[in-house]
Image 1 (tube, rainbow, N blue to C red):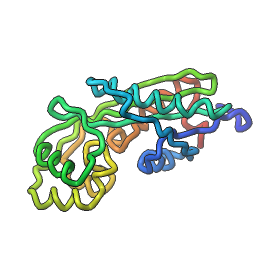
Image 2 (image 1 turned 45 degrees about the horizontal axis):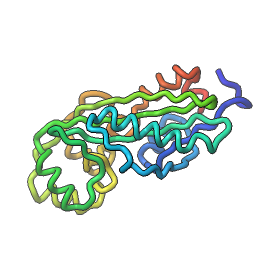
Image 3 (image 1 turned 60 degrees about the vertical axis):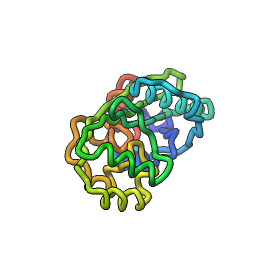
Image 4 (image 1 turned 30 degrees about the vertical axis):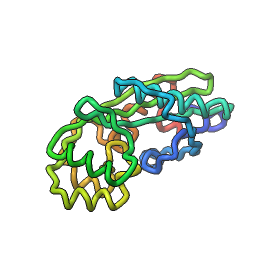
Length: 199
């Protein structure tokens, strides 16, 4: 158990509301400090390595600003038919993606990077298989025009309207929202902390 006086601050290097809410729901109230890292600098064809690299860059960009903090960086992409998809650039792109994904299965990859107060950086990735419903064009268009897919890797938010259109998951549910809570627990343990240290 880490004493309150020596307990590091928990910093989330992401502007993602969904990730922050996942942490808050698990009892961790992070200080939010988006990295604003230029993701175009990373062009890794393997989805797992891609998200790991981005997560690490985001965490390491923020970590030097803090003297006693655990800094968490994350990044998510959807791998589908050999392609890596982040956030769609427009509703038209979201519609085209959903027309391709409907009735199919994709893999949601999330990279996690934790930087300890001593500067140690731990990286892990998680993957969840996502089974998409076979939607008609009108439903796809309505969902794209709702605006929700624009903020989400893979053009869907399972914790929002998009949850209506996912038939099932294989793997960690919270990973699809943007952060695997069980993986975070094990990563913190590797660094010598318990989740309860941050409650």
